[in-house]
Amino acid sequence: MIRRLIGKFIISEALNKYDGIEITAFTHDPDNSDSLIGDFVWWIQEGRDGTLWIPTWGNGISRLDPKTGIFTNYHHDETDPQSLGGNLVWSVYEDRQGQIWAAPDAGGLNKFNPETNTWSKYRHDPNDPNSISHDSVSVMSEDNHGILWIATYGGGLNRFDQEKETFTRYQHDNNNAESLSDNNLWYVYIDSHEQIWVGSEKGLSKFDPTTEIFTHYQHDEDDPNSLSFNTVTSVQENGKGQLWVGTFGGGLNLFDPNRETFVRYPHDPQNPDSILHNTVTSIYEDTTGTLWVSSYGGVDRYDPGRKPFEHYYKLNGNQASAASH
Image (cartoon, rainbow, N blue to C red; front, side):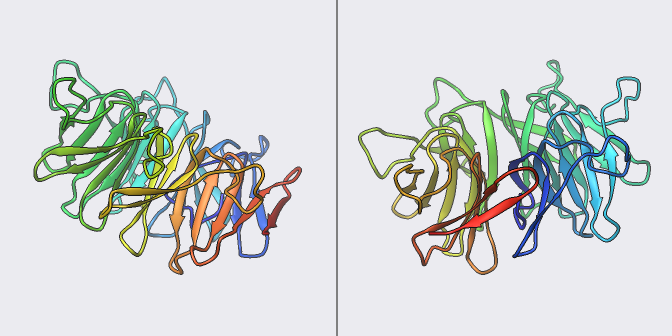
């Protein structure tokens, strides 16, 4: 909804542009092929050339040229094997080489060829242990060595070597407490120390790629300093090396990796200064240290030096409001 929320997991009934004063909505126009491909926007990724890649829930992907305001659209075509792998797209990612990757639901890992406007696909092959572990890809992230780390919903974590085009799988093992805690992954994030953080339906896990050991952080009802909820939807490192952690039901958390403790920021219906909703979908910290949080309630702007969350939410039609307390 607001970007610099670009490259994040959001939910919106349109594409919204915020200029610091007003919010402008871009919607699908069935009579205009140059308009947004669908109104249920799920994610936004900014390319290095300034274009915006906008996956939608059920309609494919739009690419917006901000200079012209024209959308180029990509959708799945059952008769075209080089089309997008599906129309329900979870995320889009641009790697350091400027390559665009997409994650259509059950469509494998898709790579865009800008010269031909086509998509190649990496699919799960049950007979090939070096193929991707599952066709439902959630999110991707690239480390400093050019390795893509791929979270899947159902197949755990994958390490993709682009030069060899091989996948290494990291999955839950009931007999190994240091394995991945759950194979249903929502998020993967690489911090400034090259530690890999994985959000699943069984908490937050830290993966050390050198030792290949997972360390787990989960909700504990008897510990107020534990994670607020086990389904983790987003992770973002702040300037102090701490992690903001969004959850699907427990609001926002601030994790101190040194103390291994969480500070919780839940929605409180009795407190207008609290976060809008406990289902957090995206987190972004801008260059000023201000935090932007997308949730089912709208968008919150939070200055860690102040207590209140400033709220941005829909009023009616395409209007939006900013309110602080």
